Image (spheres, rainbow, N blue to C red):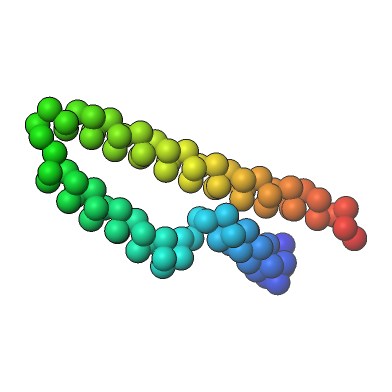
Length: 91
């Protein structure tokens, strides 16, 4: 594969992944940090009996974030593969 084609494919895949949130912009990173700070403040106010509920919520939110990211990565990869497989159809 020549270098120009390789670069074009690489740029497409990178852009598509970015579009789907794989490369979070600064505001997303800031929001994640803000959520962490709020969670820490809330945790400091909880009674001992509430910690198990808090941990369950943290676990559920972690799973949710993981599943969302997995979905976006898979969708981006799927689009890239479909593009590459259809490459010859466009000549």
